[in-house]
Image (cartoon, rainbow, N blue to C red; front, side):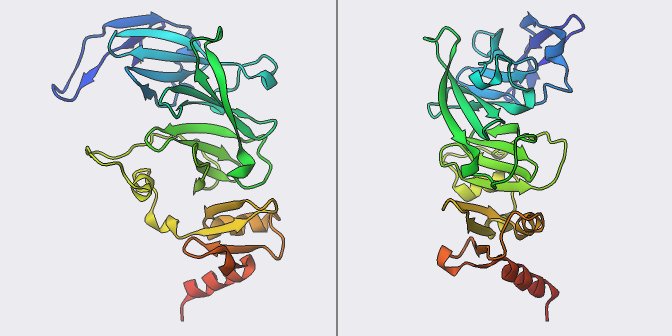
Amino acid sequence: MKTTQHCRAAAAIYSSDSDAWSHVSVELAVAPTFLFTDYARKPGVHVGDAVYWLLPDNYILEFDIVRRSLSLILVPVPVPSAGFPPDYWQSQLVLTEAKELGYAVAMVTDGSIELWKRDTDNAAGWSMHRSVPLDKCLPRMQMQAELSLLGFHEESNAIFVWINAGLFLIQLESMQSRILCQGFGDFEIYPFSGFYPGDAAGTQADILCSLGLAMDTLNMWHYEDPQGDLQGPFSMMTLQGWRNHGFFPKDFRVWRTDQTKGQAVLLKDAIQSMALAHLGP
């Protein structure tokens, strides 16, 4: 995709067989704000014969590869937003279980993600699919002022969510989460699944490695929250940081990924044990 000085979106197709680009065969007039590259920074999502990009001002740009056509789609407006579309960084294009175009929006007021799907029978073109409560898959801490949706990994149906605790990857079917990194940052995420073709579906470990995660992150820690839900895995550095900020009681217990809940130990003892192991004999 590219833009011209006349504020038009133009499309061309690259062929890896011929190692060449097609001629620019289609253009679409759009508002100047749609094309600010400082804002439209999320990769597109491939659905059927089309590729979709989320644009600022709450529009979706559709490029039909077969018909060679460009069009704009208005995103749905959730009811709790009082008639105002969500912020660009609080929304994300995703795929539904049926591999159709979906739209995720962070509901900062109740700490959840609403998932919408395209619905040609609905006058608005969208229908509410389901709501995902984030307290089931993220640490139980204040998220309202910081929640952002930064990307989507199509092959594993997982969404990248950033809160003040760090960047998390949430699998939308199982709702399992994994922390990828901590701290603040201006993230731009471009997930990939590899640079070679494969006939068989990858294992979970293959998917994690393809996302650039080190295998040693699989050996991390879990805990049970006060509601009885299992959380994790998280690195010990992450847990220690949350403990230092007062998120855990003194008798808080954790266990490693290769252990069971019955083998849980006090977090302070686990921290001390790892510190001694790091110092060596």
